[in-house]
Image (cartoon, rainbow, N blue to C red; front, side, top):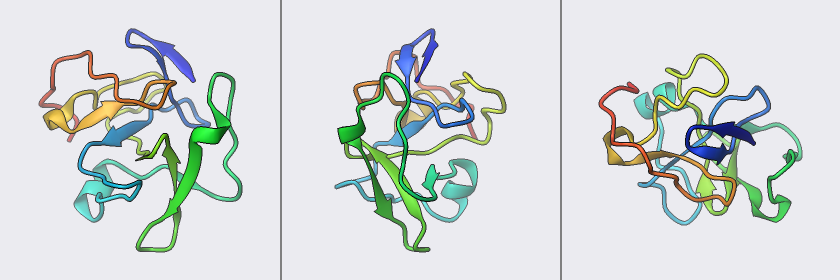
Length: 119
């Protein structure tokens, strides 16, 4: 977890912001191909570990079509964004009204205006 202007948010082990995609359903990713090149799925190798402030019972994985395991938090598959090049950046917040930073509770934050950047 990291503190940003949006409040506490989920980050990966490198401090990169984690996002959810509103088009995902039932804990399964719908982001493949070009989408996944811009919004890489947060993948798990081995058992996922949680940091301080993250609820272990909300962290699971789902199997992608390429058989890799993607992290899921509170039912939302997780992604990073290639435009976020440094820890703490949130360039994808509100992108196209479908991509949102994930709160520590596992929900979209959605406090910023939708941005046209992020691709």
